Image 1 (cartoon, rainbow, N blue to C red):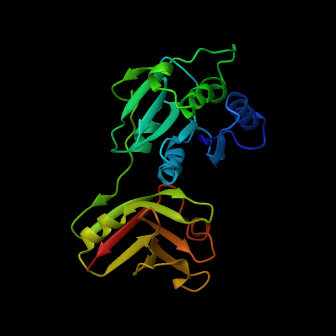
Image 2 (image 1 turned 180 degrees about the vertical axis):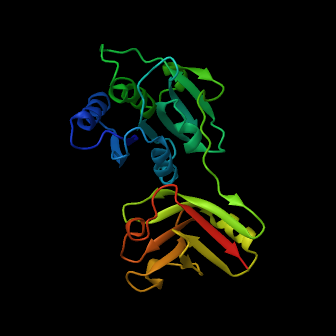
Length: 261
């Protein structure tokens, strides 16, 4: 059964998402449509890239991922299909793919040449991405729906943590549903700089601090703060059964500093 995933900012209160799904089933009745998230903040390609990057490899090889974020076609923004890690991705060349794939080199990129069956130019996810996704989900080749490209036209660089001999300076890059503040500090970098030393994690007005890494949320009492590395090996600051973003003021781009002794 062909799997098509959806990562969009279409929301669930309007008719847009239903139209996309209905069009998929009209063109490929046997498709299995999986919602990754349709509540991406409008036009937020960084958020979409983060969410999709953390789950797409859990899907079977050959899955088609339709991404509808800031995707209106323009002279400076083409529509593309990408094959990487055995998966297919369809969306706008607006910087999202360089964030999503980071340092992964795609196996193939094509600029979509899907003929529109409507005069509407503002609903790319339905009128361009769906036909391309259904074609690939049927086992069709990328060459039929587009012309080859060597690379993405628009690239955006993900903000990386600053590494020093005795310090790591990072930032909050995502706040999840539970209010956990996820940073751009990964476990490998942390251990490489740490070298077995004690440390202090500082944030907020730097009057908040954590001095150990927990393995799970329940390692601390309810309402206590903690730091741990999640499944994606990114450091996160959390409150057990609480919302760290609200209670600790850890919103996007807040600075997190780790000092090693």
